[in-house]
Image 1 (tube, helix red, strand yellow):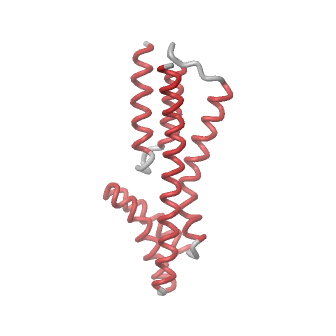
Image 2 (image 1 turned 90 degrees about the horizontal axis):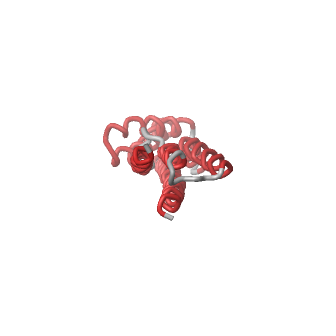
Amino acid sequence: MDLVLLILGILFLMAGWVGCVLPVLPGPPLGYVALLFLHWSRWGDFSPSFLLWSAVAAVVVTLLDYVVPIWGTKRFGGSKAGVWGATLGLLVGLFFGLPGIILGPFLGAYLGEVLNSSDSNHAFKAAFGSFVGLLTGVLLKLVVTGVFTWYFFVEWLF
């Protein structure tokens, strides 16, 4: 049973890493579940406070991932049209793989702003903010999942 829990933990860690760049998978929560699988095996013995704070980090980063691109669009001068465009662009971009996930919010925010104000310089700035927000969200997810991976392997191997 311990070996099954270990294998499940490793699989969930791998899915967590994929989820850091694909918005359809919640990367940090999957990484957290990997920690739980290891904890329930004979190799893991995480403290309750570590598990609690890890759960909080997974939830907060996952929620921030949805908010940061919108914040980036607004911070760089985008309007509601740009925010909606970035959101719709992300949803459409999901169908085009990684390039669509990266370019979708940018193009969506740009089109939303152009349709709203027709000033292409302003639209480009707002679209760039969406892109910065998207990259910030991905970076946050990668950091948290990396920390989970570190603790998983340190606990398992040492």
